Length: 421
Image 1: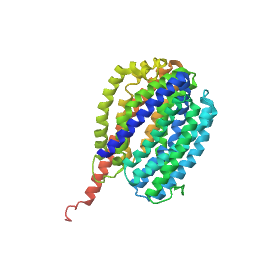
Image 2: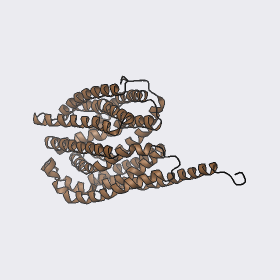
Image 3: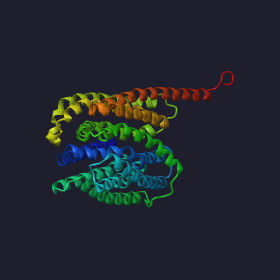
Image 4: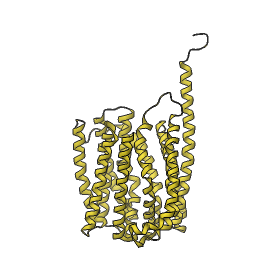
């Protein structure tokens, strides 16, 4: 676990470096309004990406690890799922973005859609196959290559003074397509099968839909505020708010790293052990809650440094960062309670809770943003996060008690009855 944790931290730190560099160079090149258009496109497609990427990868992990299904069949089935869903979602994403995003060219939009829905999900499938069949470290190296590819593309375009959303989209599409072809060939060779699309198994689709629904709902909660801001004509505020939001979420590095490393531990069954998943959630969630509290204080103090990173045009983001500072604390508190539900086999309940909270968040955005702008976005975000913390821990406590009662019942049935011993 220590080795995997080290790789997870390296991966998250590399992701942060990539985000900061991309953020700084794009912010300086595009300005608040231009960056607002770029951010609004991702706000539109983020809830959809999970169907072709994250959800399929989690389905691959669950069926290969929890149910011990053949790795080659599972991986190829999930690859076909990813490609099929990605093709459909490209069209859906283009249709929605045509109504919401006004400042980007069609070349920029289509190239980003193909990258996010086709080439990057294939890289995730390759990484998920390695994580299922070998270890997290190998998967982390594949994802590091993906992060490094984007970083090289952004820096190169900026150095050549050709960095635009369209040039970034096209170059990144070509680079990730080449990387996907390479890693799929290598992973297939490693596990002795040809990594090509295979027969889709219905059970994989069902698991993907359960996981994807939860992640998509979470993405709606995460990015819905920016989409509503853009749709209400707050173009400049969308860019400023997206910048502040991204700075705050850089603090998610330890949370994301520990979530990735412990994912397998939550999936492994511990039959007959009472309170197991609740203890795991308290252990990991409690430690990161302390970190989140310290981070919130640090963000409030360090917020004035933001313009030094992305330019003086983003000085208005300072106040937004301070308002959003409790976000990582709240995410840390809810993340492991939700993973505890997953470990108990309550993935449908987990999805339902996240979906309900996302719907509440969207209602708050729609009610508050038209009148209060970015302050309404902050209020809706924090309120929905607090509700998620409360309901996720309440659900975990109830489900763990139910599981413990079942263990006690099973144990009593195995004990000899009085008079028969």
